[in-house]
Length: 115
Length: 114
Image (cartoon, each protein chain N blue to C red):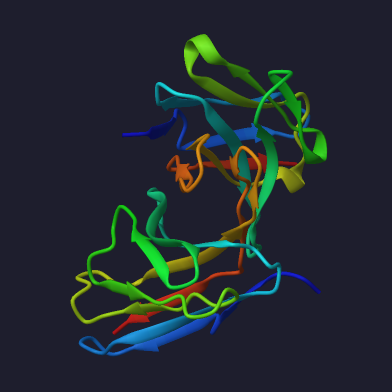
């Protein structure tokens, strides 16, 4: 099946620890994205990448880091510098079609709780 | 900077009632417009999208949306809701140029009672 996988579904960490969230896609999409979803806040863009070895900050990049070493993978690290890391994290990807970037396809999400 | 505004935070309807969820965006250029839905416990999925052409677009499950350029609006409608439409709905927009990410509204929670 083609799609986006995120693991784990639930993640618990102690305050002060870095944690890495996994995102893999087998859709052969060029672009990948990380969003954070909080109640009443919608989805806010953390980082995105249009091509391997390149990525751009989104609206709320502080306290996060990413890498894009392979087309199919875009892991997100939540560092200890992120002041309020407990949230639901969504990964997405999109193909690049004529006329610009197309719709985004979303993974199932990872719920991170920092204790 | 682009922004998306969804007018209603929480809408409560009875089955068979009509639905209209408001969405306005701010951006002066050409945009792509989307409505996504998140059913309880499920992935965020695309309901419908507008890129160009007929401003009235039809999506899955009987939903439709109308793009009114002069009002910068892309309201979602359904003539008769069902209990299974209970979900959170997100409007999103991106500028029609390569390399721009989606900007999402804050979402509207729809609760349908049977």
